[in-house]
Image 1 (tube, helix red, strand yellow):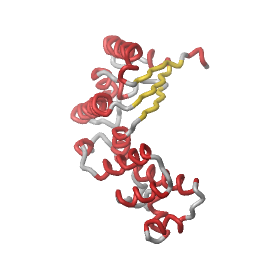
Image 2 (image 1 turned 45 degrees about the horizontal axis):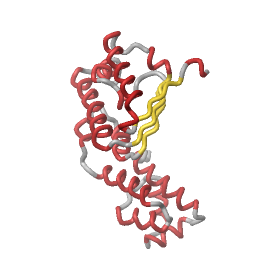
Image 3 (image 1 turned 45 degrees about the vertical axis):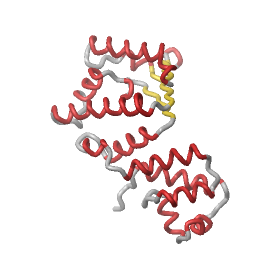
Length: 214
């Protein structure tokens, strides 16, 4: 059975295919740009093979892709090739999970909707510990500790270092679902209130979808 390609390669490949088809180019046209055969382009677009920085730049430039979008795709491709911090957490991050944090760290904008719980980037350490304690995939305390470390690392890298624009919508249920007990929820809700009041200064917009909205 052919393994599923990494998410980041599929994302880059899908973007390249979308740009190519938007111009009305065939696979053979794209192959001429890189001076290769059409099967290579096909495998790049399906995520079954990677693409070198120079090749990615050549295709995106030929397709007329704006510089900010080029930079975002190049960042995802480059981080996927690096031995990043996520490699130390293979016990708690699946391959798809590693792909996710790579793309999250490279994002210029993050849009999120969570109906039932607070998203990882906005969790307090105590809330993250309670989530880890309830996760059946984490079988011992060492893994649970690592899962909390991953959450806090993601927050530091994304919110304090990279600072992308974030728009998050929480379902009202996420505010009522008790995670870790009353004390944990009290501090978590206080953090969310602070973000809602001052998050715009850090580029974060937090909204709540009430039950009454249906």
